[in-house]
Image (cartoon, rainbow, N blue to C red):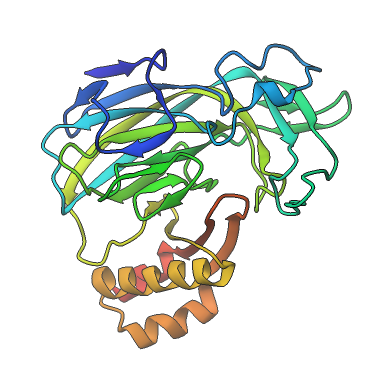
Length: 306
């Protein structure tokens, strides 16, 4: 059974446990979620279009479809989302926006002014220009559950997930989140056709509408699952969301030490030293209220521990 969730009337700009559920799924069920582009749905209409200040109302961006109830989910559970498919729209955009990005002139909010590049996305390519074609690498920017207390804007992130902007949140991989509220309150949105590390210019990916299909799973949460995790066919990945950047990196590495110790019986001290040799780590975005850092470890190394 597959449940389809429409984006129409269901776009939220905060992840919250107070909003009414728009749909419900059972653990093991497949759900298809329509996700709007990260600015007002319908704003991007044609290649060559230039956005204006009236088109973007900060902080009402990165809208996510939800909340979706996962029946039986309780605090202390782990929600897993196996990403089965991403169908991208045929048009996306990236932009420079005063006050947003790695180099915000926060006093004058001047910089380069508003610069927009609306592009065609087709045949597995982002058509950047007549000469430059970029292979599509679809990913989900916002995925999360309701936080323990209150609500968190969809531009932000944290232990609940949210605006993570990690390229590994893509087809074939599994995202793991600690449930904080009954029903989990799942939100998905802010999809990208491609994104470079750091998402340097704020609206830095090729932002695009998409239809995302995931299989929902539920299990007891590992005791030290404190921040989102990702599993790929070849790697396990831990995330840290924080400012300053070094705290985001420390969190991601700390979470990896916990995971290796709990699941592979690698003593913390040894795991810490092992990361000094094998960690694959990078900042995936530094333009949100909190930065995101990912730490990756190859599974073939862990398999040596039995």
